[in-house]
Length: 216
Length: 253
Ligand SMILES: Nc1ncnc2c1ncn2[C@@H]1O[C@H](COP(=O)(O)OP(=O)(O)OP(=O)(O)O)[C@@H](O)[C@H]1O
Ligand SMILES: [Mg+2]
Image (cartoon, rainbow over all chains, first blue to last red; front, side, top):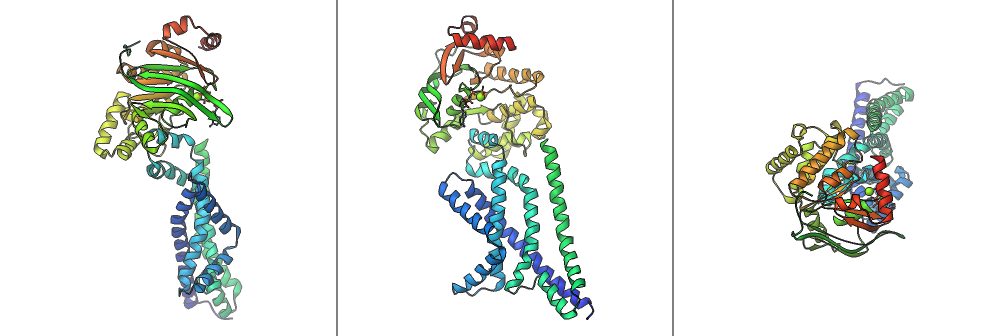
């Protein structure tokens, strides 16, 4: 058994850096495309609704691990040379956009109809109606679920290890193999995930409680 | 009657309007013309189509047949005609429908800035003028949830006025209010009427109808059953259904 010293800890922190970066990229990419998905999913055009419903269905109905594989090897098959980083970023963006799109579709639909009617009666067009009136309210409604998904996403980044990413979990595995102290190493790794995710979960459920109270 | 609108030009006209919700015939051959400056009170039992009728005027509902003209603009379902008509028509809802994430002032400046391209400074000046007029300027920086129902409805009126419409539609503006707040909203509406605004009000406030209306229109089952000047309407209603309705309303009040 080897000791867990500064070097090992530094290695874990390197992994954590990738975990956080992957989550951020997935969340931002997924957020941008997710808004688009949510808007198309709630649009008047039936084709747009059907296509986005299919998109959401596919990404919610298949494992993230499989999505990573398909994008990683799929992009390579197209003959495009991309590094793991890009492939994984694309996969997480697609995955997150489906989930966030569906969460935000629900929140857009949860904004009372009267808001759209008032905006229409005032002559506001689609862009302003969405940007100024509906989305700010929908985003607020979606906060608990959005934060909940972010937590899932952070934990889900561990799957990037499968295509060669040394993020937090994979870094833990490597250290554990070197030191033969799996319990201690994964105890530390778990604690790091917990320290990041728990405050988020807590904030999310706090928001949810406050909103439930305000709705009464 | 506050002023005679008899020789004013027609502002709104509905000809033989038909509205269906699926198999349900909600408006049956409605014809109505409203002159500039006229105040119309629309009443009738629940489900008779009052809301549907006024919502067709600003294209919140589509019609299946007939013709709606506002200020010479035919509502043909095109985006252009809808835009043109909504610019002339303001609407106040039973449930206020203020934007909860915006202050009173922001509620009032949004549409002028976005629809008309008014600068923020000008929009705010305009908003303050109308907030003053509905006597709520002192609450301009508050959020809707911080106001009473009566105050919120007055803000909603100011918000609609900020688009400087030629006609105001009211859909039961006082029925969601506590009794003690009804008067402040009615007073605001009376003030608006005095200033010559063309108004179509769905309301069961018969005192308001007596005081302000040029005509009272009674609807039942999607049809206009009777229309008359308030004096005549209340004193000697012709139709059996009108009599029954008035009997019920007056028993309640
Ligand atoms: N979106 C809709 N889909 C189907 N039916 C509808 C819809 N909106 C209204 N209706 C029906 O049309 C009829 C007229 O409704 P409307 O809201 O115009 O009545 P109203 O006279 O305003 O009644 P109230 O006094 O209750 O407000 C009602 O029978 C109602 O059930
Ligand atoms: Mg109604």
